[in-house]
Amino acid sequence: MATINIYKWKDIDNDLQQKILNRSEVEIEEVMQKVKEIVKDVKENGDDAIVKYCKKFDGVDLKPSEFKISENEIKDAYKKIDKNY
Image 1 (cartoon, rainbow, N blue to C red):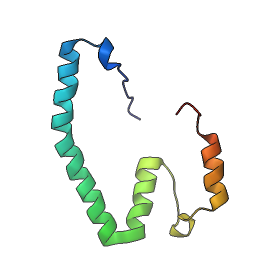
Image 2 (cartoon, one colour):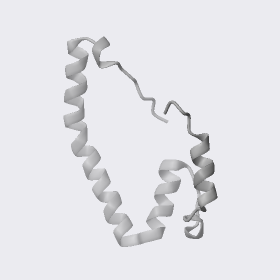
Image 3 (cartoon, helix red, strand yellow):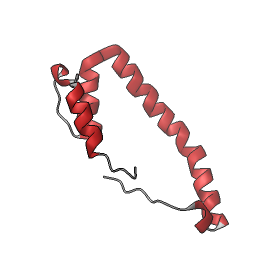
């Protein structure tokens, strides 16, 4: 899994700030292309595509019958979120 560097903007030098700004411009096109492919796949293949991406991105092997979760499961999930998040 990739690591994410966290910077406080005010604490980094101008060179790194510029590098970060330039990186986002370059990467957005690549990201948008991937997102378009995923959206197209989901439109064309429905639940089968959702199953594939849940496994790929979340490491979860679901069946379409498991997509819907109960209100209690949602409430339990909210309770697990760090209050400082």
